[in-house]
Length: 104
Image (cartoon, rainbow, N blue to C red; front, side, top):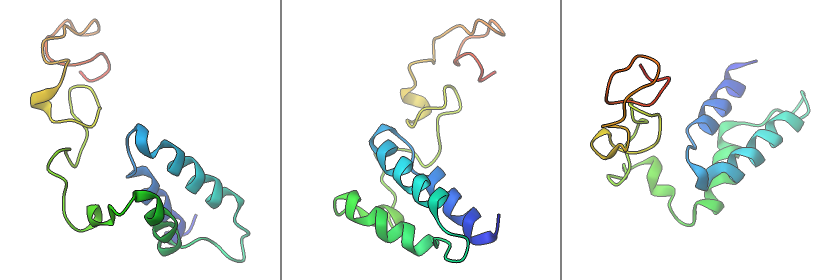
């Protein structure tokens, strides 16, 4: 894997959530089917993603304060920790309260 392919994979990994599932699948399929002599570049992926973002290309330059930049550390979903439904959950693995199983 070269640096450009790694950048493409990191871009795709950043497309989290159910609303990006079809885009992630299509971009991954594009990378997998690329011929070695003409690899896909990060700019090509961004250009392909942009028409499907419905004019929301601003998300690359300005943060959306309605959703966090990183997943919740209590459950791994894309919401703020203060809104986590697992805040009062008792973990069956460690028996502590405040996180989903597997996030001990």
